[in-house]
Image (cartoon, rainbow, N blue to C red):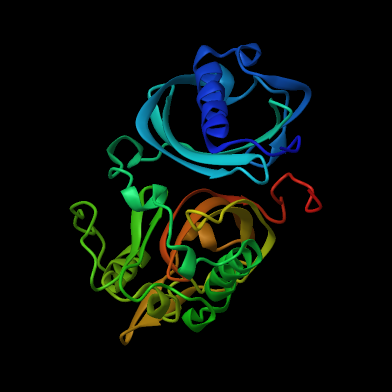
Length: 306
């Protein structure tokens, strides 16, 4: 086994160790290399600062994504910070039994964080070898999703036609016509808002939804990386920026005009840490955490060559 290869169990234990040290507010309680690089929301800072000083506790929601071949692992975790719930996307790299990289993306004040639907078992299921994509194909198909969003063209991506659900910051953003809704939906307060437009597309196949222009405020993507690829389970965890030029004011759906959110009306970008589950060569689940309306061209904080 090379210095970067670790077993699935070892990598899961490393996530355990990281989260335990985070709760203790003491990085020395985990196996970490002296030169470990740490970022929170795309900014490199000393390990032990930021959330390490303000976290109260972790909540029950946690989904791990493991890549034994690359020695990397990621997780989506609910936390509470100064009595406010949030969601974290976490990525670690392990070499020779030590954590050498930590990347975190935090969505603070996330209303759904303490009421997340239970993680579906399919995230942890090995897929039939006959239907598996290889590493390169998984990365390419995941990037096709980014292209589809940026181009308003669902034909760019292969979604599973039997079942496809997408959660972002704990909020249901897409669900196929054959799927059971993961939780009851609250009424939309403003029927003329962008959120009302999104709600009207739920039940539409996610590929078709992307072609409606509902995300037309996203004008490009950049800095895409897919550091965690689990071929056995057909899961990909990626990090990238969705960029908004601030020039697209709204969209028309079924003959009705909906203005885009205020946060899309100036140049900015999102920083995302999302996971994708493939079944039969197509995306069946997407779930992730993102930092909204970050500084335009701020990037992810990581060298693309890594």
